Amino acid sequence: MKKEIENSKLRGARVLVVEDQYLIADDLRRMLTACGVEVLGPIGRLDAARAIAAAERIDAALLDIDLKGAPVYPLVEDLRQRSVPYAYLSGYCREMVPADFAAGTHLEKPIQANALAAALQGLLMGASA
Image (tube, rainbow, N blue to C red; front, side, top):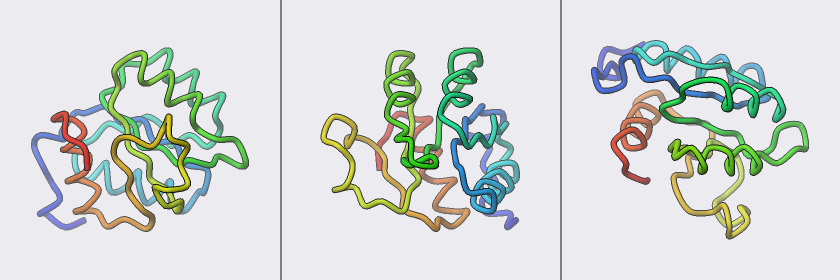
């Protein structure tokens, strides 16, 4: 990974990655690890992601919207209750997200490492893309 994606503000952050496509999940894990992030997951099933979210300290979450046909929105509700910032990382355009869940950060796949690091930094600092 390129040195410019390293960012001390990301180092040690615990980020839940919820993605059901193995290659994308592995790329996300590698990009985040290169930034010093502690990756929780990647997790490809909604029930498993909700269990991790309930049991672990999470600083932020990156969420695929569709997990093998199951929408991620129940997990979003869990994260909102705990005030955990999250971003959708999806092939879906923002307009396809139901209005109750459309606010916040929406990143389109595929994402480059620098853009991912910048978006995650924004999440951790309370900004929205």
